[in-house]
Image 1: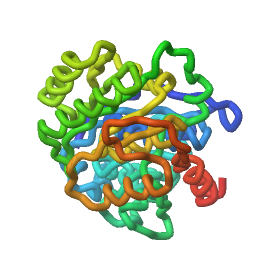
Image 2: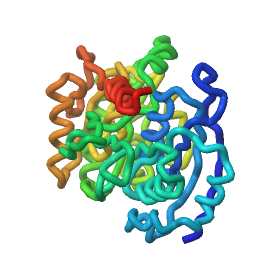
Image 3: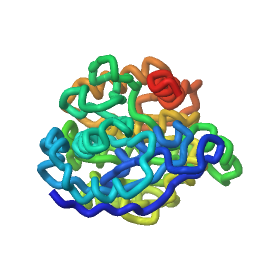
Image 4: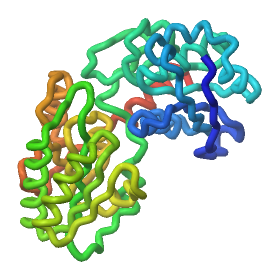
Length: 328
């Protein structure tokens, strides 16, 4: 059960509440998950520390064995540090370490776990679960979509409106448990993105995710190289100025496979268009249709336009409920 613990940065200082670390964010480095944990830490307003921990296989698959990790190296190392008020984790992979910390420190640290852990809710102090999962309970706060690390005000305050031509930002996801896009889906997305760029005489900036895959990237690169003069292509493992792109873009396009990607962009005032992949799980489609009905997103069909966008206010509503739950 030994796994290496690496503390690699203190992310934030906020001296208005405390000068000591009051929150641990524990992550295996998966960006979509990590950003949601950081979003909660950021909203709490305390100093927080980001701790990288890759749980062993059994702990990922059977989170409840976290109660039996009393001799684990990670708990011994954490025990050498001043205890924080909260520990934040996201995703089933990280549920086990949350349970282990709660049990080992005998409830001296409050655990906040994001997403459905698929085990008893009584193993956590507080669960933040998307409302499309339809799970309720005394220690559950339902969120509309995923929490966003980027705050709309921060993006809008730095918005660069002096670009020579409009900028379109296309964020491309890929295969996961619910979605299995084919080559034709990426080809169709590429052709529609070209059409939208040409109609607006815009610059297209593309970013792929770790799930996109080399084959899909080649399809998209080929289309854009042949049909566009002005585009920039970033892969998930390249130096990717994601926040800077959000600040410059006049239009956002994102694929439908990731609730966290859609939610993150939905919090920003920039018009957001979602390209729907063929999908297997109805609850995600329900989530997207709900955002459409609320005027937050539009379906991407090859044409971009301005509309009176309503932002997704998951962050603001969630932190109020967290403060109320813990009586902060």
